[in-house]
Amino acid sequence: MTLAIYDTASREVKKIQSQSGVTSMYCCGPTVYRDAHLGNLRTFLLSDLIRRVIEVTGGEVRLIQNITDVGHMSVDVIGEDKLLAQAAAEDKDPFEIARTYEAKFHKDLELLNVKKADGYPRASETIDLMIAMINDLILKEFAYIGNDGSVYFDSKAFVSYGDLSGNRLEALKPGHRYEYSDESGKKFHADWALWKIAGERTEMIWDSPWGYGFPGWHIECSAMSMQLLQNHVNIHVGGIDLRFPHHENERAQSNAATETETVDLWVHGEHLLFEGRKMSKSSGNVVLLSDVVSRGLDPLSARLCFLENRYRSQMDLTWSALEIADAQLGKWRRKTALWGTSTELKVDPEFLEAIENDLDTPRALQRLRLIEKSQEISDSDKRAFFIYADKTLGLDLSRVVLMRDISKDQQDMLNERSVARSEKRWADSDALRLALENSGLAIKDGASGQEWSWR
Image: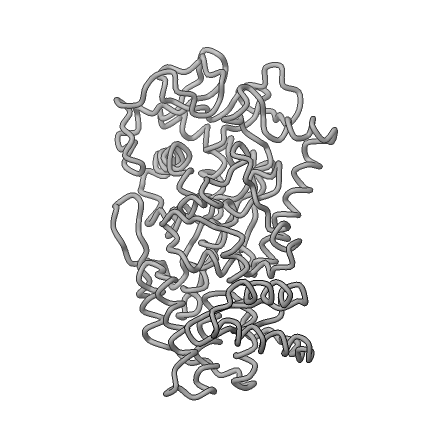
């Protein structure tokens, strides 16, 4: 395998290694208390892209993606559990809330053409795995029972803490709340809860050797990934916001329990901005996939927009970019259909080189555009190149497109607009564009003139 990806831990691009031809992947899944927005979904498209590249080049992938349905303390609301807060807001049982948003999450993945993982373990159904790992960590003296009855990880006992994020224990300031507002029982301020005693909490609690309570956030991923991937993960994927403290703490727990380095590559996708600001509930600029669909845009236009940017570069998404991507998808699907009906696959070396070089999707897409416009490549070869590329890109380019003829009025307006543009009557050109768009066409102006597609 020649796929190489940037590893957060070593700060270098590394080739992927696998055991017996099977690449093990773990992707941190959603906390299912609300809809996943496009910023969240970018991470899951990243793991899908990695998987597709490995599979299209002959490899096999085992992907596990957890579902966090036991909640954890919100960084926005002190002392309030995200799932319990949403359950109270909607006046529903917290597990009903979890199942509702979990189903919506899977629907979003389907709309984005994300392949199903091999397993979606729920935190609520793997409490036994977490309890077993916590017991093991206590026995190995990496964890202790605090004077409040909760169980904490002893960060000082793990000598390589900070190797992933660069945050050293001596530099972490006391008073910073990494997860819970009440952690008075721990020995050191940078320790974290593995099991929280329930206290006055009466919902979403489980029995344990330390009394009724609930698991800490980080132990969930350690327990599930180690159990379901046999104590070793070739590629661990998540958003950049999880690098610290979640992934740093997860690494400490998993390595301490197995007494080995459990992850080969830590891969992080960067933040998504929307029209200049980080997409977040607090910023008030959350965009859901359902918002894209409600505007009449193909949900895969979001996938194409993400591919136009490197996964580890901050990206600024706009409605204009989504509309352009939607038009591009329609154009490529029509051309793929016009190029024939063959299912033959043909590898373009430059496309593959770009993809395997740290997932350089912008360069790969540029190569497709050159193939599309080439006068030296036959239509049948163009189709074969595009179908192969789509095995990686997941844009459904061979989808059958209903080829509708435009009306005489629409053709007349296109002709009039072409003349207006040539005569530099920009106001008339803009007015005709608006009329054409209202009639159902998408217009794109380029060096070769105006192009149209059905919206």
